Image (tube, rainbow, N blue to C red):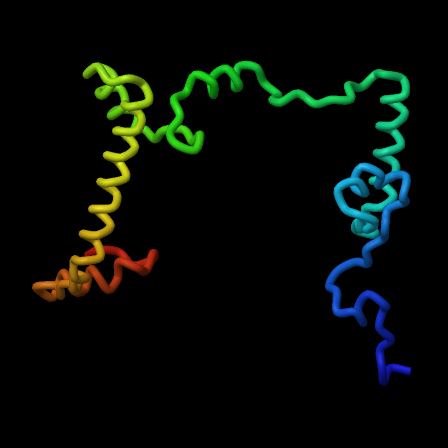
Length: 165
């Protein structure tokens, strides 16, 4: 009776966790367009809730009480702030150091694009030289305490209950 445990089918396949259940074909129509003829697998314990949520959304869309398209952003003020921030190459926001250099370059009469490129180049060059200096420097050796009292205080510093005398 207790000699051998029976294994569940999903355990035999070597898959950890819960079995995956395919969604019905009509529910996965959007996913089917992206993936050619492959079913969409979901966690078995989440399956009922997913179906219920999709049915509720379909009912709301039928009554036109929910918009069918999403906004590109949730908060207007955050979007406006992000639009005002200067960006570097690849669309990333400038760091504080790059912003300082950018403002200096613009004050010196550079165009906005030239000022951003110069600021980013300067900061990245500083970072490269700092990394090279760090690699070239030998590791510092720890110094030994000079007298007995310093040695005693360093030994007890790690113990929270120890008190300095």
